[in-house]
Length: 553
Length: 74
Image (tube, rainbow over all chains, first blue to last red; front, side):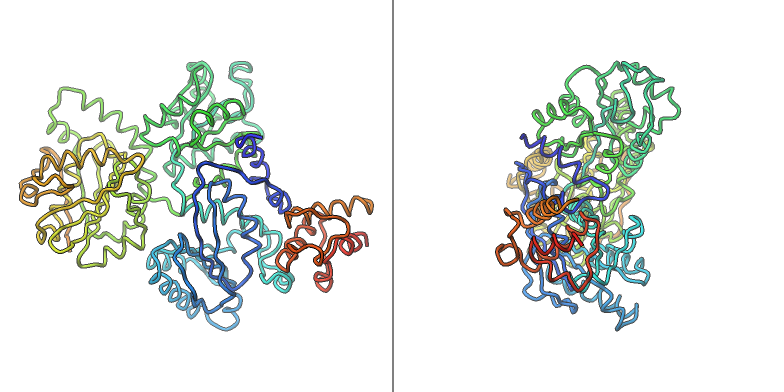
């Protein structure tokens, strides 16, 4: 059986509601050319193995070969025999502490233990626990101080209307987590909590129309014959929800363009509207080509696209031509809903304000291009748009977005250092380093933070260890203003004799390399990824551009 | 379900959990993979599939295909 068919068949098991323990155990392994090996340290005081076995099929489906290293049962969280891993997971039965401590003492103790773990590693930390106390405060504090994430299992239990605790299980299996909720938690663990932190996000949904977004075939049943019964309305509503979180929607349909446009304009009961789609590809051509074109228009890679279609033949064609594209078989509206809810990498730990700005920003880009192509000079163009760069230094309040930029940017990413929150925090605290963020806004849209620069002073050389610009800011020819203005305005720049850029070649970061080559030609005599400070001092920002520059430490 | 159907289902479940061939004579003594952790998984899978809940005191005794089938027949 082909791997695609295996994957499609496994969907029925993986995304069943609730998943069956037995069927999960019976799933065949899925081979993939895209497997990535990851290691997870599990610090626990109750049984984790049960969840691990049930989570593995989901992790394999997501392309992760996951090696869990389990600690002994240790309620003191001593982190003995710690070794480097990609992820640290604290799996804690809190009932032990509730009997012996107060809420304040436990919170304080747990925060201390997370802080101790943070001293050992910069890997992401996830704390999975529950208690009868309020956990909101815990969540905020852990997140802010240590770059850790908290899962409150009580909330999952309530959402899924499934009991969390079963004391009979505690005696027999070494965990009070009930038998019934275990497969549900395993799916959350793999698809949301682990993939949401270790895998790059899905940035766009490519949606087929007939029998994917509505029941029926538009070309045969006509506009009044297609319906939103049996869950299709909820599929459309979920797509809108994802769009609000910054996921692009692409319509990929084999139909007559004018029929589909008319459908969305005239069917007032459709939650999705024509202009909800960032790219529309309605034609009789190849869907694989349509997806590739959409990726180009959105300036994203095809491996960040999830294609959903009810036709296995179409899925097969896309898998053959673009094996990196993610696929969901829309067997029914209900199965699509569950698959979209749990599809690995679609759920994220945190959506920032900047995520939500992404979709609106793309629409504004089309208007910008029209203006740019008019008779305006460059200065008039920026002035008319009131284009503004806001440069901030070591902005802890924006650390989530900055880590996201470092983790997600592929094209304009010079060193591919992929710093997480904890690592960025270290740079921010250092007197020899700085983390610069650049935000971009104009009359048409607010793009939010679009660039991160991490620089560290090594003797008299300012080493730029990370330089990323979001693809939403590319194409406006502002790269020099963003990078050079930011660097020149750091205090560390005053102390250095050279500015050196770290570069690591990746599969898609040629735009960053191209910028560096041009900058070296213009601002350097050495030609070794190094810019001359005297030449940089003479740099003048583009005329017409507004600049707001914060205080550098 | 008759005795044979129950036994076949028990064999299917144990085989799926242990990922090894199982027959009606199999037990934790004949199957190396049937350790204490897998025993927990087998019991939970049996409870899920037969929609039953075994009494706490018999859980550790359900360590062979025969004993499990007998218990399910009661």
